[in-house]
Length: 568
Ligand code: GLN
Image (cartoon, rainbow, N blue to C red; front, side, top):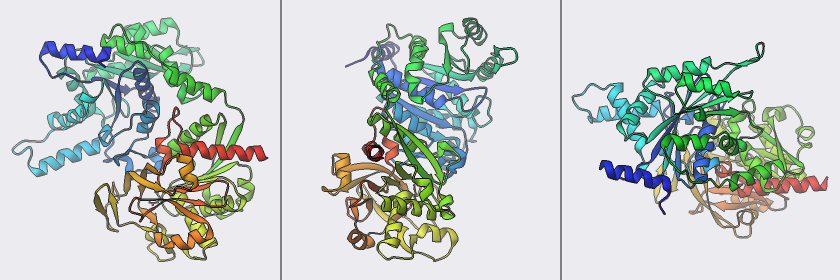
């Protein structure tokens, strides 16, 4: 069925003789300061357009020079979000997926580094033979080509630009957007700009000047916002909205207040109340606008605000100072709580503590233990202790990626008599040979219908086992029950793998290899047979959890934690 908005675009193109079926573009930029919640605003707007019956895709353009965030430390950049097709992307793509349910692709994330590396590759190949390569037009053309990918598939393409306007690195992106908007039929692209209204306690005033300046900055590079989203810790009086509208050349109804929220999942309803989706549709001249159906978000909020009781989950990890480093895990736990109508209180414990102290007094306070993914040896002995505690005490345990590998090493050392069990990753790091590699460096594996090969001295960027892979589950296993299926697909991001040759010895002790790659060579899931809930997965289930569709592993993990509560 053609929706109202789609039809309008088609007609316009019919009249101008241009190609039919082009998406409308919404560019999202930020000013004044960083960390204003641009990603969240973009994701919430995507959800609101969906609620009005439109199809959307969200994209992130990052000005930094890394080719992708895969090699950045989680301390610096937060979590690396992995797509089904194996791209290592910014954590904002996680927000996009959690709010819209639309699975991101490689082509939904780009950085200056990638753009430049594409341009330089073409230059070496001779694609521009005879030409001098310049930011305009070569770099900007590369950006515009990227923007257009898949435009025929959706009603709205939302493109968020990382950083703030005025950053040197961002300029080619802004210039490309300026050209892009100019080259397309009028009214088919809009710009939404996020700013901050700081509050001066001494005078009790909200200040609009930084917003005016950041809009001026945009105007100086040929861009003008259609919608202004103003973050503020205090209510924005009507006269301030009028003032902003006047000075920034936007309609008053398009000045959207954005206040702090108790949970990020309130964003779609809060932005709707503030008039964001209406302002966006008005800016495109879509009238009458289709009515929104917000049931999904009222249900999400109902589950969040009417939770009974609390379960406490210990997350024993390495990157504990920065919560963004495990963003998707924190969110997936919240979703697991929503599925069980219970609040989940996650506490981060630095695994290194357990290398000095007995974990029992720390962990006894929790209903469940989660050991997340990670890289490098630091903290791993502590994670092994946490896995041992969970196994011995019957506490629900979810091990993700490195958290699964540590559970297997714990089992090998303490149950199967492989006393020197360890991961090759740690020996590689130190350049020593201390461990028996129960977890080894994977050099060859099957992806779809081809074989991927790796060498020990390969580049570090983009060479892990990345993206969605199928796993086959043993029919009588706990995981098959949890998933309600025996074939699953989950996203991976790791270089090392549990060695199948230890399977028999470990299974004899009760650690069942309940999920395997389709060729039967790669262990994907392990679980302790006689344990209330102990599951280790080689993949990252947290990446696919949504507030309106909690991931079954997280939902059941929290259910098991809740059972513990009942026993207490
Ligand atoms: N460092 C481990 C590996 O590369 C685990 C990775 C992870 O937890 N994502 O296999």
